[in-house]
Image (cartoon, rainbow over all chains, first blue to last red; front, side, top):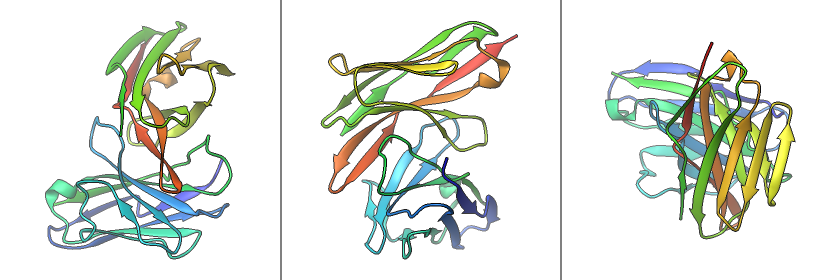
Length: 116
Length: 112
């Protein structure tokens, strides 16, 4: 399977600060990146979809000015949670996708964010 | 848009067989996938059905009936390590991308 890394794996921050999460696809070129958020005992909720070099498309209810996504290269995408609040505490997971194959979707190991 | 329904929890004993059902509603269907997620971990891909029928991968099988908008994941010879959440997911085409949507997940508890 594909190798995907996320950094950091967990982070604790104070309310009002910004947190940047990096997602790297290590062995294939990610033309598309999906960013998900998962609250405890709930499903993965798609936040946004980005294509390399383009602006991200955000799902309804997700604030684009709060969750900044950069997908400047085919191997790296970042999600920045700006002015984080306790309700942003969640498990954030990236899922890169290359050109080939619709069947398999790979996920990063996730980043657990706790905002105090 | 899409919606998926799957049971919230299933329990079974070691060595048994369990079936997790998934029904879906979607305006454009591009396959049904299944994922496993252990507590604290990320989802891992289990199987994909693009056409009707049964796909078998070791102890796991997945079935799809497009006319019934229904699929299931079958787990055989259950082991304790199979205790996890299982998600079905469908894809819908939006713009140039295939957007996956996940069900709410089924928590499988395997007892000794």
